[in-house]
Length: 78
Length: 286
Image 1 (cartoon, rainbow over the protein chains, first blue to last red):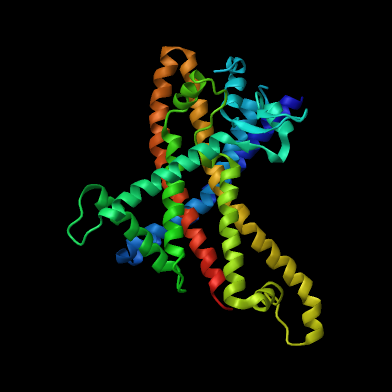
Image 2: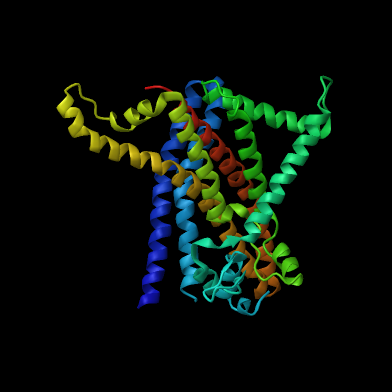
């Protein structure tokens, strides 16, 4: 029972992290493309800012992924 | 590897264990020989591997860049000198772009943070078993080669940045100015009674956002690198599953390493950028 719950916890972690970052990076990428379609000359600046914000958005789900994988492979097995 | 690495779980846990030096519960000082022993040491244990690799990489950074600085001339640079100049230009552009105050500390600080964190992160791209295996042959039980996958290292750096922001907040705005910033925003009032009522609310909000900065700064770096390391370890597990799995594992290892270069660079850059932004906030008046 407890093992099953741990697997579910890991799965929920991975799934919700995926949903969140999907929406987040989706909006970000859409705006980024809109921005460069409007003003292509701003591309270098926008690309830098895009990567900064993507790194910020990306951080939480990747931490979630690490914790989920840790739960699934190290905690459950041990 | 040690005896507990025969199972999958043991292998993962072995790779996530730092070489801790501290006081055993019976009062003697020494290395921890298992995760349980390391936990019993409590707060006053030092992670020797993290310290060793971060200091070595920091010294390497100073030596490499110092060598270039001594050779610097007004002529056309070549080779290593060219690269160092390019890095310094890049940092300089970023600092000038986002820091408006006048402070000679910010650019060297940013350069150090960026290159040092980048070098520590790049240790992640060394195959996960090489250095621990060498260390094992030398009789060292645990060896975690990426200092930034140890929260102690990232929290240490973030605390340094935090203390600097506090110092410059107080220096630039004065103790009263800093206190006013903590208590008179975001809700403002002209009525003195209302001001006193709003004071604890403002202080709570501002205090949380102040303390959240170093925590998010360090956890972001730690989490990204920890995740990367974790995936490398899981891929490395495939090598124990026979030839077919080993080939798949090799391809995955290469693929993830190439993808991970982006994260490695990006996280070092973000740590640096946020440091500049926090210090800029400490310098600016409201």
